[in-house]
Image (tube, rainbow, N blue to C red; front, side, top):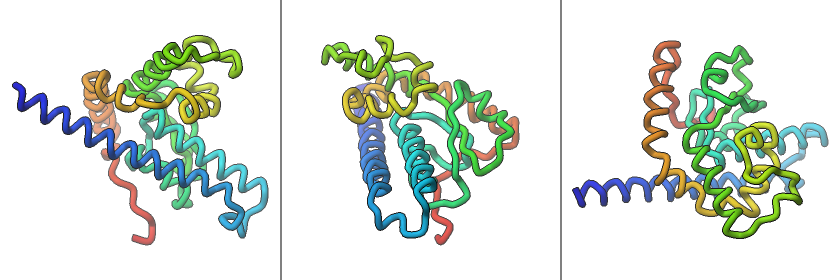
Length: 206
């Protein structure tokens, strides 16, 4: 039994490390969007649109959403920054809305998973431990899933600058059983609809 527990802990640790590295690379990528040389052929409106798209992608990663894309959610920042096939991300409340969406293929639809609940719970616990003042963001206390969907940009700011530390680790450890049940359900739904399982994204030039 002890050996199984050690293997499970190692698996969770390796997943957390990979996820952390992915988030770090994603944050660097989003910050690069603010460097002027990156925009030699776009106007100011296009620049703002691309920055918002990058932030939406970063939000999907940080809040551990799933998507209707054919690629893994952890690849979403690279996808929207480097792949011209994708130029918008919208958020919905459930996977049923996401998989049944009739939006065009250039639009990625994203929704919360059980791990998202874990991230949100961790953020609220951290807010209590820090005696964080939500009033400056005009949020209710605690942050709700409704806030996550409708005020995603402010939730992203809270995650990056104040409350995100340790949230992925918390979600992996405490919500893995619920996440596995979700994986089973969403996989069955994809098979029923003839949708292939997501794979790693690869650049078009590979």
